[in-house]
Image (cartoon, rainbow, N blue to C red):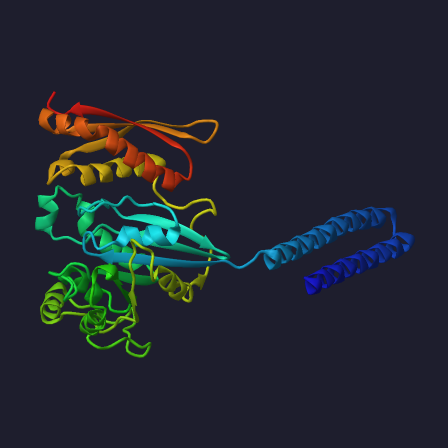
Length: 387
């Protein structure tokens, strides 16, 4: 700052010396010249005077901008993609880190229906989490009436992220012994990415020694070093080549680190965040300081109601219900008042929801209070699609 101020004063002195020199030359010319020469020199002096002031002002302006840039603190940015199979705990993990329920959660699969972002600011660093729907096949997408984005959101998040975190459910006895083929496919398609493995739901594993054996299996007893990672410009495998590799592998040998957490209880989550922050990069923040998600409030409210339907209704019934905002207002005291319309596929489903509507509304209100950090008044209205 001190150097820039001295530089500013030096330029101002040089500009004043230049103007004084021009003025002295004009005075000499006026004393010996004719009337015409005096007139032309007067015009020239006036033009040079204006030019000198413009040059001086521009130099002062540039110096002022340099001072402002020096005063402005450098910010850092980090984008993290969270991928995994349905119900592995991706949204719960992000909610724990952010400190509020940004994403709806339930015990059923496919609660997260679209790619969304959660934002947390720590000092000069902004961390953006890219939450993705659980990876599915086309058959699974059709079975659960899922959006087309389910098939491509994982890949989009992979391309945007600086770090990729694979959340693996170790509480599922049937699938925990290997990485899901859909996860492996993405890792083979983007082998140059910085990827970490997060073993979630470790609280459900009684024999903790088994976690070490599982870690060895899922990492192929190998962790990546900077020298062994592919560069982004290296040749990508074709889909056929990827499928052949996926069939042969149970794990991925290029994970940078392995973490064991219980996202629901919050254990181990802090260590993961500390690791992430090491890899933040200098850059502008993507969102203002007050933003904690890129989702609109209306979307958050609908997703909260949808998650409570999933939790309180049996089997496939909640997947066939649609939620829509009818009213969403913020009162003077900060209270959010919302009316959500639930469209049921038939009268039978409407009657079933009517029996549990108070519980669904109360649970959704509780979730939304945690999200918005304010009082929420929610009313649910039912209608039947076939009417």
